Length: 296
Image (tube, rainbow, N blue to C red; front, side):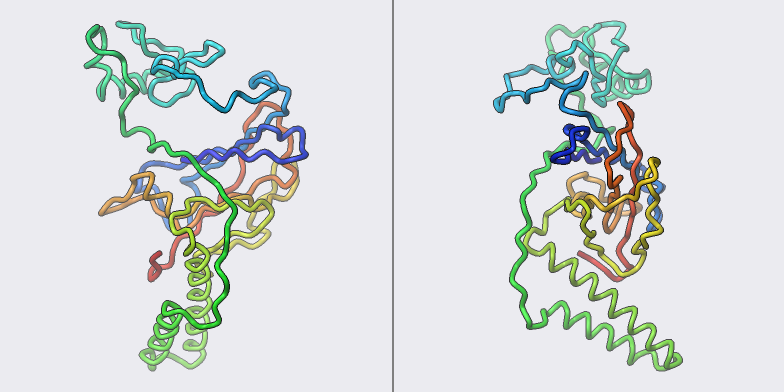
């Protein structure tokens, strides 16, 4: 779903540091405030390593063909469908490679059957519904607007909603009314803060602030410090970035019935960004959904 290149300045072991976020594409698997459909993994390497050159590549990329994209500079062939290492070639044309028989079967049904051994047509990039659309993340510092002491129309509307709840619920006990009003007020304030913070850049899909605090969409299901599990090395995890609900628009996952959804996905990583060798380190995601009456 998302790949974030986030090296830590001054930490040699994290010169190349990438966070990979994955999610299930089956809408029926998702339930409110449940993170089991999402996973995040951290990969990091020092500047001198066995995989990347010591010096960065030139800013201008050389022209490449579709065939070049499927073969790394090291000569490793890639799966036409997902981009992972592909060691299984099509037995008929030997032009394209795949990581598994499953991906070969998907591409055969979708596209490659029409191209295989057809000399009049070149092999194009795979077109399928297997992966999310690919986009580039463009980052820039956030510029918050000046605070206005005057209440906005949205905040007044939220206040009216709270008042109407209190007035129409005359059958409830006074203590229950007070508790309900307090909860509604806290939740509306949290959601109002969320909307005000994203108002300047309403299309933002990611907010990065390592060791900062997430921008929650609701006062419900906010994790305590104890709810964030420690890293396998024993170090506490800290907030690093969050994925916003606006990303769902770019992933093309909206459906009229069940659909993939979230209010925000907060990613917590090892505070020390510990060294796990060449392995991928599992980190932690906290999924918070919107309340029933909230819309962005």
